[in-house]
Structure formats: structure tokens, C-alpha cells
Length: 82
Image 1 (cartoon, rainbow, N blue to C red):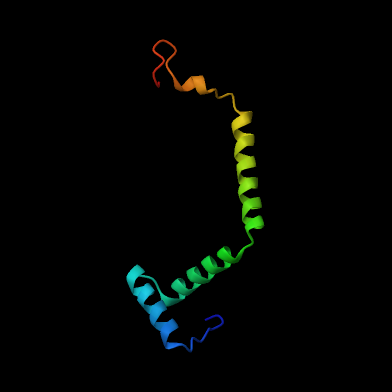
Image 2 (cartoon, rainbow, N blue to C red):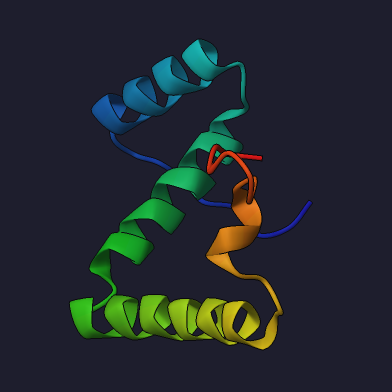
């Protein structure tokens, strides 16, 4: 067993236990997920925005590198979606 975390709050234990039961997970899993979500929410907006911009830029590179044209989605004779 790794390091241990002792929760000395009855309310915190009750919340973690209730969530674990509701989602059919261990208390450890619920606490880990909650802490990860809390950490992600605490990330500065500028860092989150920078990560999204990097992902979008990567997507655009792939789209621009392909030979795909929007016209390829349509039947040339009918103009309807192919």
C-alpha cells in the first residue's frame, strides 16, 4: 500500500462515501477524481486557453495538409450530400 491520507472530517468522509456508493467506485477513486478536477479548475485561464489553442492549431494543420475539399461531401450532379 502506498502513502495514506487520513480524513478527519465526518462531513468530508460522508460526502466521499456517498459519492463512491452512487458511482460504484472506491472512496480513493472518488477523492482522486475530485482532487484532479479541483486542480484542473485552479489552472489559470491563460494556461487553459493556451492548451486549447495548441490543440486547435494542430487540428488545423491536419485539415490544411489534406486534399479534402468541402465539395467532396456533395454529389456533383444533384448538389445533395453524397
